[in-house]
Length: 516
Image (cartoon, rainbow, N blue to C red):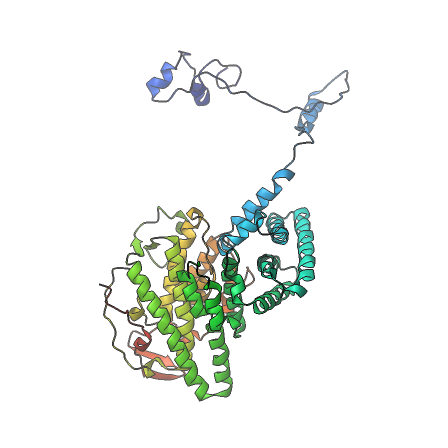
């Protein structure tokens, strides 16, 4: 019978095509004439599981009873075969498939999962991975198992915290960081995150910056620093991380490779929580002296940021380009609100991360600065008129916050579309840039729909714009979006008055030499 396994002697190709085979060997002539590749006549071994048990004989078996017996017959898996042995691998694979955690925690989170950074770090990582896996797959038994590991790890941590001044206590940094990730993700106890943040503050301040200068603690400190800065941004509260000893100390070892581009920008970002606190004081008290001092401090950090950008341009003159098609980026084809026909493509994931963080720092600094002083009150400064073939904004091309926010979102498109191809690289801020950009663009209908789709199209950021990950764009209300977009007529509305708008060229740090 043609097409039924076990009853036809034809070749596998004809069997699949449900045609009569001429059974010519070694290959079927019918397949060759039709242009198909004959797969031969060898049958694969067909393994089937049957349940064996005692059966009662019956004198008669109607068709109904036979059908019932067949439907009730289920394959019996031997009791010694179980997925328990693979549970750790499954849960960790799922945990590290989340791009936020895998890149933010690289490499210390991965090493913790392997048990290379101590028992407490391993147990904290087990708790984190089990709870995340159980929550996402609605498996209460696994989630309860994770909660038990979490409780055990917290008890052990609480016993060791009174001794944080002792040598070696700096190793508690990584377990506390993992427990903080757990509490901020599972949201079972709203006070748990506060407990872990307080533990981080205490540990860092007692042990001092140089205790975290060696790997793997330095990488963990870099991640920790970024988290504490975000908390400072949201609460608009100054942190000790802006102090010079904390900006230099963790990278002070002679064998240290020095700061990478991301951490150079984080040095500037560490000042922003203090700027926000001073800004609030100026608004509440009208202290003009503090206002002038604050403006000078912001200008200084903006100058450092723009100097970084000019140096970066010299090192990476072809860091980005645009393409006209989406075929290489099918994920972007799911976005119905894309305001651009072209895709911004970066030369590498690392460069995309760096330029996105740079733009975030610029948004913060300019947003606060323009709330304190009219852009028109800034004197025009001489600047280098440099043309660039890159689609990325140079410092002397920035005239609005909206420009910067749009560039962040275009880079984020590239990051979403290529993240699965990128090996784990430390990314200190994954959602902060697009969160800031979303706040700047939220009053622009054309862009706000696009930003929401960007959040929702990615598995790791879905629901973020609405606060689905515990944050959301609204928490980044750190500056007045009144100054988000420039006006084509060269005028800008500032606190109810119109001034002639002059781009803030005085803030543009000039390159030390001509880059051409």
